[in-house]
Image (cartoon, rainbow, N blue to C red):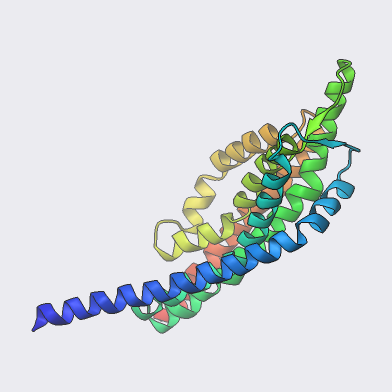
Length: 243
């Protein structure tokens, strides 16, 4: 009898997981369609917003289509991310206490908000600096600048998305604090090491000048300090709940 109940529970879990996946996939497909419809306007905006005037060229018949698809995929990803996070939370919710359920629900909008902030910061601040620096170097050596659209967007994604992921640091720290892996004291003790790692990351992503380095390193430091505050807040809230 107990074995049958376990099988029914497993079937129920799989059925629930299937339902959640169908919702996420459906939203992704709809968002991907919307992405294709707005890709032209979005690509034109990206071109106009670039700090350096660049002519896009295609070196293959499929380059234009692939860029349309990549653009649509990114739009779909941005629209689907909060839905995916919410559905993940809804799936694990039955196994959480009421306080844990309320606490983890905060991760959904916070994670999405930080990701959008990271995309905006990396695209409007860091990417123009890197692009301008690279263009200046090419002009200094007398090279004829002819950029392929595929190479341009690959370069842009390689700059924008790693920084956007780093902006998720407070959410990751908050989650690890909830699990008991991190706490404010541990974070303070590793501050020097963390700062060193963040400096290496910042310097590797920006042109070799002090202003550009500071423009990315200072926000990364602030993210780490915010992460410590988030960890401290989480610990206090947990103690208050238990007390």
